[in-house]
Structures are given as structure tokens and as C-alpha cells.
Amino acid sequence: MVYKPIIIVGGEPNSIFFEIYFKSIRYKKFKSPIILIASSKLIKLQMKKLNIKKKIRLIDFFKLDKYHLDNSKINLINVNFSQNNAFDKISDKSNIYIKKSFEIAFKILKSKITDKFINGPISKKFFLKKKYLGITEYLAQKTNTKNFAMLIFNPSLSVCPLTTHLPLKKVSKEINANLIKEKVKLINIFYKRHFKKNPKIALTGLNPHCESVDKINEDEKIIRPAIKSLMKLNYRVTGPFAADTVFLKKNRENFDVIIGMYHDQVLTPMKTLFEYDAINITLGLPFIRVSPDHGPNERMLGKNISNPLSLIKALTFLDYKK
Image (tube, rainbow, N blue to C red; front, side):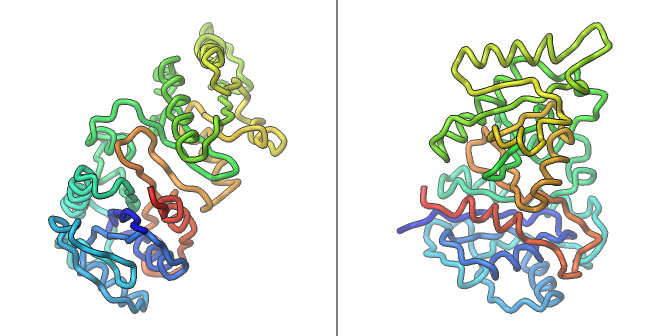
């Protein structure tokens, strides 16, 4: 039985990602070959620092379809890494390295050899440089994807922010009925494809208790009509619910997904409930993109105390025969 490989872009070199990668492949055997796109120099330095004993198999990505890979060694597509110190502070010095890593991944994914993709954490401040709100938006732009959604997934409950990495003062201007409908449809497609079910979806309101002292109440003018329209199309959508109570145990048990109006409205309770037991899935892309639900965390770099659970969950989700 042949399993498509999982492509991983290591991401920010000065992060905890390689530590949790080593821990993940030591914790569990995966059927899908894992191909890491990163620096051989960087890998060896971190393996020495973390006392990891595993051989490296260098891969030519132009001949990727010729290999018969397994995970007995680290399958590595080497990307030149020019920094002298592999345990430095995060800066824009890594930008060329990260950009090259993504470009190689895009070529592989476009070739249709695989559609399974993971990226390690990236610094929004330095790599994205305010050109993109986040890596989700960066990937959407690079693949000409217009409709996409960020799903923070756990089998018990998932969340989706309607707007992603926007400053709060801009959120209300971006909320509209079409955006709500797009996210609900993408979530529905995902759950049907992967779990053969029509998900039960709750939408939060924008305002505290779904009430507003302003003339325009987005909950009544935009969100509620969008929900009614979706219900007529037989989507299992309800709301709007007050964000401060929808996550209570007896309430959240009624739903597969809770869509919030902005990033922290749903990611804060999600991380409080599940901590590292969740993964970030980008819906709508021409491939399946998953990332661990954490950032670079350079303060813990090289200390060997980072939790690999989110990456283990990401690899496990993609470790199937399509």
C-alpha cells in the first residue's frame, strides 16, 4: 500500500520546531514518508544540541517521484542556510531561507506527487513584513485561492475565526453575509469529505451578549440574516450566540464547530480547553495544509522542554492513504 509523502517546511530556523519534529518521529511511527525541507547544516547543529541520533537521507526534489521512501532516516531536501548561529534571535536574516523552502514545497505540491503539507511556525513580524496578515493569507495568495478558512481542529470541537489576524478596530468593517456563507460552506465540505457528516455549526455574535448601543447592530443586521439564509439551504447552522457562554460545557457539546467573528474570540477558549491538542488546517487550498497550533517560541529554543503534541496530531491527521 502506497502512502503519499508528507511535505514539511521547517519554517523559522530559530524556533522550537525541529525539537518537536524529533520528538514526534521518535514518539510514533508514521506510514506516510515524511520529507523535510530545511537546512542540513541547521538540522545537524540542532541534533547535536539535543543529542538526537538519526541518519539523514538527502533528497533531490527534481527526482522525488523516483524515490521509494520510508522514515528509517530523515528524508531531507537541503536548503542553503547562511546564518552562522543556529540559535540566534528571530530576524529578517532568515527570510531568503524561508522563502526558498516554501518555493520548493509549492513546486512539489503543484506536481501532484502529494497534497499533504505542513509548515513550521513563521515570524509574522519579519517574514511577512505586514504584506500578509498571516501564513494562511500568504498561502492563499501564492495559490490564487480566493475563499479560504482557518480551522483550529480537534475531534471534539473545532473553531474558525471569520476574520483572522486583523486588529480589533478593523473587524466590524470586514464582517459581511458573504464571508459568513463562504466559511460555513468550506467547513461543511471539509467535514463531509473527511468525516462523512454535516457538521453542527454555531456562530458567535460580534458584540458582548449580542447587543449593541450603536445604531448598527451587526448581530441583527448581518449575522442573523446570514444564518437564516444558510438554514434555508439545509446547513446545520445556529446563532448568533454570546461568545462568553457558547463555550460552556453543556453548550459546546451541541456543536462540531464554533465560528467566531475575530481571532482571539474563539482561539483563546479553544487553547484554554485543549492546549496543544489541536491543529491549524487551512480550508480551500488546492492541497491539505496543516500546521501545529503554536508559534516559534524562541525563548525555549534548545532547552528540550517543548511539547510536541500538536505536531504529532498534525502528522497523524495527514498519515492516511488517499
